[in-house]
Length: 195
Image (cartoon, one colour):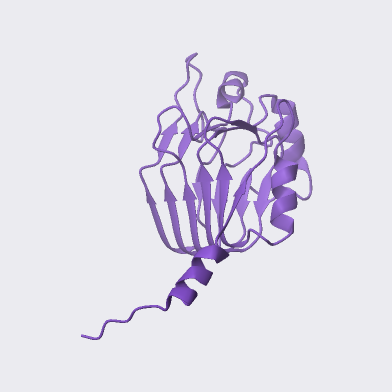
């Protein structure tokens, strides 16, 4: 058997090519625009980690549409929150540019969506309880569209009271999903429809 060893220079250049973007957070503000600005530059659409940092509660008050990604890991180590106001979410979903899900992946290869194994962190709060209590089904946001991904992983994700459909993988192939947790339990007795 022939053993091949990569030259140190080649190995070093590969390691140095990997980038990490820590999504910035501003208290009380929507954190989506800063993420979308970074994604628009193209610097983090390949060979990168997009990190929602542990210890931070992110406000994802507007939908996120990821560009085509290659060799990218999106890590949810902090907690993410949809708007808690139904009308705000309905207005975003009703716009003509809504990507179909609150978090929409549009394609790529070797993409990982990874949550956290920490029981306190890595949660995505959909605020579904208010929707269930109001029996509101107009312009509900679907959660995650992991679409047109080849060789993808969805693991360790934790969804808290999602409003509607959780994960869709339309057009994707060779996807592995495991160790994900969806808590769609009403605390008031109202029915958590279509989660």
